[in-house]
Length: 321
Image (cartoon, rainbow, N blue to C red; front, side, top):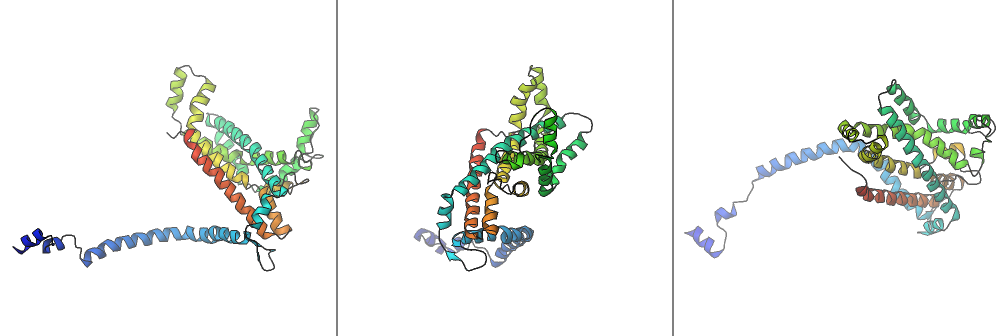
């Protein structure tokens, strides 16, 4: 009778009160596995999270703080706010460094992609010794950039280089290459593309081997020729690998430094001065660490915007099987 009265009056009875109750033992059983799972995840993440924190995240925000100050790496910092950013944006040297970097990417990206695709297509066919050839093409990728740059500096030497000697055999006067302002950046582009061909080849070769052979057989039966199969089957099915190569090559291209430093040092007459080279010069040659940090953040934002545009635009041309 009491329970009936409680239900009519709207007050919960004893049964309703204890319906959703969980005792302390049940709560401990639910909390224990969650805590154990969290500790397990943390144990696996900490070895990689700590280096990321101390060598990437903290230095990034430290560089941002330095970019808001004027600092020569020795004396005390002087607060200037966004003055370093406004100075760099209006500086013709910074604008020229960005233009040279874009020039490098425009020349480098098509060369390394088309060359890597051609090698991948050739090594994807059944030819003798293709395993050894894959290793030979990949060998420059694991070679030090300084070694590669010095070798190409010797090959492209205007007076004693092999390239100009070979051009002379066919009656062509070789250019000044890295000693000529008009040819310094093409020299760097050729050396960079040669070194990275093996990496692009491996990525595209993996994509080619994932394409079903049935598609090619059906296209052949329908009368599709070699070029038709390339543009209608190979390239569309290879678009995820192409997207990966383009994104990675653009990010690395905007950070080009080693080959520039070893081959030209940004010269002659700043004709090959790129953004990272300017960051290095501002920091260690001129003692303007605040401006160098601001330029590094401008480069980071520029790369971020370009990458986001690529990720957003991939929906229109990347086809995932």
